[in-house]
Image 1 (cartoon, rainbow, N blue to C red):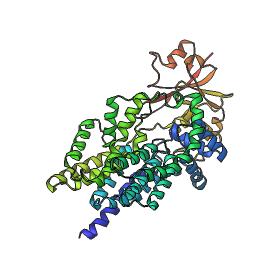
Image 2: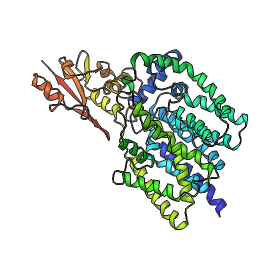
Image 3: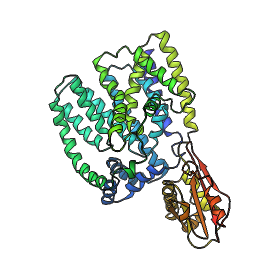
Image 4: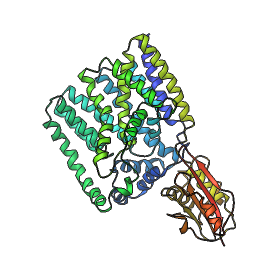
Length: 488
C-alpha cells in the first residue's frame, strides 16, 4: 500500500506546488521593480549591460536570462510571470536530490513541498519578475552540490559546485553569503578549505569585472539613491523576519505566537539536530538573517531586506518537515493537521492577495475618463517618489500599442483609449508648487502625503477646481488617488 501511496502523494504535492504558482498569475499588475526588469531586458545587449551597470545594486543574470525569455514568448503579463514561476518549479529538482542525500523521507519531503507551495512569503516572489526566485533556485542548487561535496570530496564535485557558484553570485549580492557560509562550514567541520578556496577563485575572478564597473558607479553616486529608503533594522524587524520565514506574517492574529510555537517544536523535538548531516542546512537558514542584521548596523548603508533572504525558506521547510515526520505519532498527527489548517488559510490569503497596486487599471481608467475633445498635452503630476514611474510605463504601453503587460481586462478593441493616451505625460513632482497648467491630473498616495490639506484642497484654494471624478486604486499598503484639475 505504501508503494502506491508514496508516489501518489508526491504527485499531489507537486501538483499543488505548481497550481498555486499558476493561480492568479496575471491577476496583479507589474510593480515598479518588475517594470524595471522588463524595460532593462528590452534593451539591446549593449544597452542592457550599460543600464545594469548604471543600476549597480543588482548583478545582471536576471536581465541576461529575461531577454531571450521575452524574445521567445513576448512580454505579456502571463508570460513574464511564468519566468519566476519556472525558476520556482526548478527548485524541486535539487530538492529531491538533497533530500535523498540527507536521508529525508518521502513523507517529509512532500510535506516540505506543500509548506512552500502555499507559503505567503515564497508564493509572492514566485510570481514576482525579479531575481529573488532565481536566487532561491541557484542557492538550493549550490546547497545540494555542497552537500554532495561534503559526502564525497572529489575534484569533480568541487568543480560542479564552482560552476554553479559563478552563476549564483551573478544573481544577487546576497549569494556571496551562501558561498561564505559554505566556507565557514568547512572551517567548522575542520575540513580542508584550500581546495574550496581554489574553487571559489574563478567565481571571484569572473565577478571582478562586474564588481569594478558597479563599484565605480556606486563610488560616484553612493547607495542612497537606491538603498536610502532602507533603514537600519531594529530587533523587532529581525524578529519579524522569523515570522515571515515561518509563514505567519500575513496572519496578524497568530503572528509571533505561531512563530515561537513552530521554532520551539523544531528546536526541542528535532531528533536529528545533533547529526552532522543536517548541520549544513541548519546553518543556511539560521545564519543569514543575523549576519545581515549585524552588517546593517555597522555598514554606512543598511542592506537589510527580507526578500534577499528568500533562499532560507527551503532549508527551513525541509528540516521542519523532517522534524514533524520523525515525531511520535501522538504528536506528529496533530501537528500535521494544524499545518493543513494553516495551508488552507494561506491558500485563501493568496486568493485575495492585494499586495500589488493595479497600476494598469488605474492608468487605463484615468485615460478613459478624460474628455475625447480635449486638446494639447495633459500632464500627470505625481507628487510621490515612485508613482510617476509605473504610470509613465503604462501610458507608454498604450501609446506604443504594447498592451502585453496590461492585465486581461485590456483588449485591442479599445483603440480610442490609445489615441487619448498620446496626449498624456507622467511627470515626477517634488512639491505641489511645481504643478501648473490649465488642465492636468494630480496624483498622490495616502501614505506619502502628510500635509493636513490634500493636493486637491490646496489647488482649489488657488482657484482651481476638479474637472471630473477622482480615480483611485488601493493595495494592502496604500491608496493612490488621481484627480483631474482645471485652473484659470
